[in-house]
Amino acid sequence: MQKKIKLLDGSLSYPLEKKGHNLNKKLWTGDALINDPNAIKKVHKDYLAAGVDFISTSTYQISYKVLKEMGYNLNEIKDIFKRSVDLAKCAIKETKIKKEIKIVGSYGPFGASLSNGSEYTGRYNTPNQIIEKFHIENMNIIKELDIDIVLYETIPCLREIEILSKIL
Image (tube, rainbow, N blue to C red; front, side, top):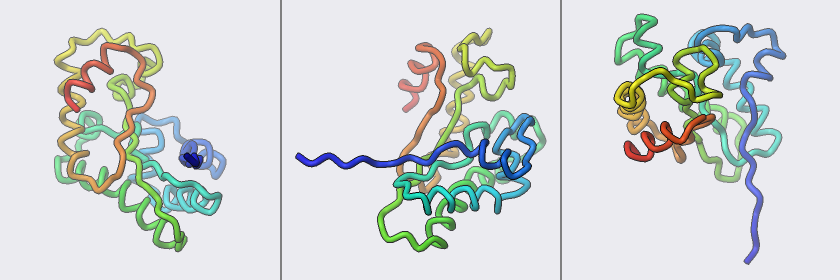
């Protein structure tokens, strides 16, 4: 059996910061998704030109909870999630890549919504029901997106993995 190596794109934050974007904000790269979507598309195109097989959405820090707290309504929140997929698709189309490129929906842990570093420690002083609600609200939007893979990144604790496994 022949095995073929597949490449996933890399960081969105580093290329954006290198181009002068200040990502020291609650939404991190999600801020560029909302305020400078062409910058996200450009990073996608650079990764595609480098030969990746998978492009990740710019939604790690994006969540229903945080966007709602920022004053967005449900339709606007859905549009922001969808925009991340549309930018990946547009980058694929514009680069005229011949091989099949998969779109990976990138989503962060509950702690990413707290902006206190707990997405790395898993030390949430939060009941399971709140964490579950966070992920269910996101999943209700994610399931409507045209993505090939759902990727939860930086899940820092077994408790949250168990919650996600139950939902998925």
